Length: 211
Image 1 (cartoon, rainbow, N blue to C red):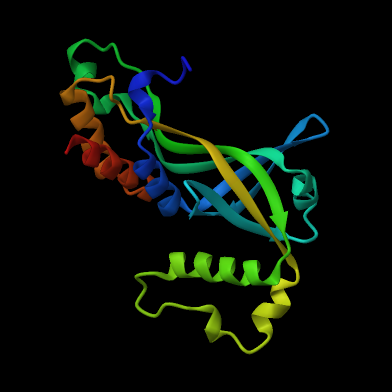
Image 2 (tube, one colour):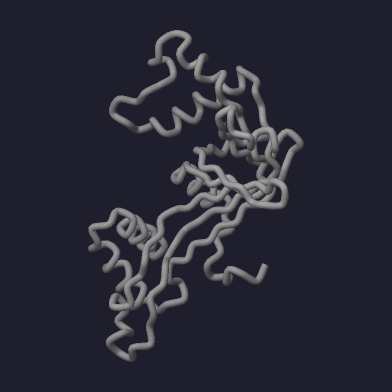
């Protein structure tokens, strides 16, 4: 693969799985009748054998799961922190002016084959895993057991589980690796001083990479 440039590629599986866990929400893309379709849904990476699968679910009314009955190819996109980069943050702007705006971002692409399940036991375990993952660390974490008897089971009948067996993971961390130290530090400072939470999140990603 010649693109993205090598310096932007992230290939460490542990880093990619950590990003998937932190981002949580995926854009799941499939092709139907020759045209791409996408649905947004939370997905969780779980180990299976010597690999990993992504778990998620959709409403039974969503036709996507029927497309997956034959084991269709799919792409799950996890969009992490991203931010516009103002050229004035580069010291180089004042020195020579040869700078332009850009966009920094983190994204993970998980390629694989999608299959559905309506097994009640699988769905119950999946919902528990998904909920526990997002509630972990909260002062008053919610669990499925907090709901009245029969409530979750009733809702569960209206969903279909999806699993994507990961065949390939691709990560892109475009965080000014091709700039010198002064420019990178200028961008970090500019983003960190922003009132936008997304800007500050990108500043943290860049600062972490400097360590």
